[in-house]
Length: 372
Image (cartoon, rainbow, N blue to C red; front, side):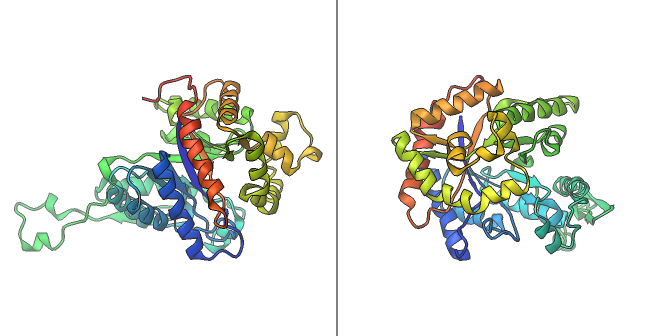
């Protein structure tokens, strides 16, 4: 199984932009050294705890300090960008990374960000904007002349003077077009979802993109693959479980007792207590976990989350928990994403957890399919 790091980044309030940036780069270097296959960087313009508005800046800097790990924005929120401008930036960055880049796209989830970008705060336009954006971006990457005047965007691609030229003279040379199409001519695109029957996961299947399931219970993981597979097959695509990514909170230490203590008392516990627990309650995001475990809302404490939602323990225990979860979803997945937390004040336990996960957990997971 592949291992990936998800930089949300869940920075503690009061962190400077430079601290957030440097922490991201430090994690990228360690992840690359210990064997992670991917690092994904979120995009948020208004949230204090999720405070990276330009993931491409982190990706470009981190790529220059690493050798092997792949990077992706997770996700560029398409309604917040002009699609032609984003297509050019994405294509150029994929060329700079020479195969170490893939693209995450999303619609946006916070009404505050919608307001900032002049969009309806109920985000009712977002699904249509995403579809129109992707239509334009894919046309730009083809580098063929077009003009688009749609419901939300106007864009186009100029004619290439070389296509009409009988010879390349000085005048034609002055008007040649740059090639910012994706590296290798094709770009892997991923889409995330969290809720049961997620429209985003279904959309990914229909478009031939790859799914990322934010862990919200075994039943929901199973449901995500089912609706993804159905949508993919209905639209002529061949889904494979190796391309399914799952994001779950993970912490690994030498012993179960130490891992649980560090998870509860460290950055994960701090963030859940002060930010994620209230956020999940606001959007009813714990309901699937509660149903999955046959619990009641009154049962939910930080300790309950540690024991029932997070994947915490020694390498052997974490492997057992992941494999048991795969058994319950009747098929498994190819990559497990580990969300990043703010351990700037005491990074050693966090980096040890990354190392144990990448070297003692992920490669030893027994998958029910071949990754090749």
